[in-house]
Image (cartoon, helix red, strand yellow):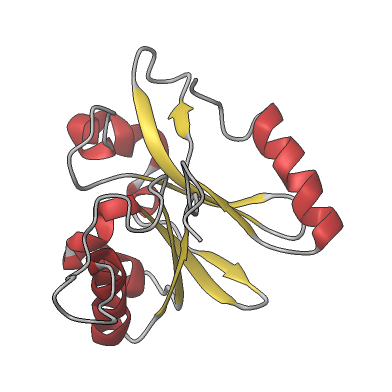
Length: 173
């Protein structure tokens, strides 16, 4: 189920982004020809031009995928240090990406900000409230992942955007 980036999947999504004149964020598993047998969890932002603007490979959190830091010397030789915290200049600001629970580690967001990020897209494959991370004893409480994103935005003076699967399973209305 891994894709190459760029590749046919990102080309197709890029055409849709172009037609809609919008940005699209996805969270695929990526295969990279230079690292056969290894798979990376990626945070990708595709712009209204249809081009891949940002491709961040997950650095933190538990994952059975390879992280660039697992093969750091080879990774840096191939892609350079700027690939660890990639940022794209766009007409709406400088965009970076973080994958899923990477936002739990303040160093990741700070690294993106130090590289100039003004907007950080935090894609995830988890439906909101999927694991019940709210505080039910407090009416109107917010999902803990949402609170973490708010804290990262506040402490770094950036906008945090998230994408998710939305509701899944039986009708939750």
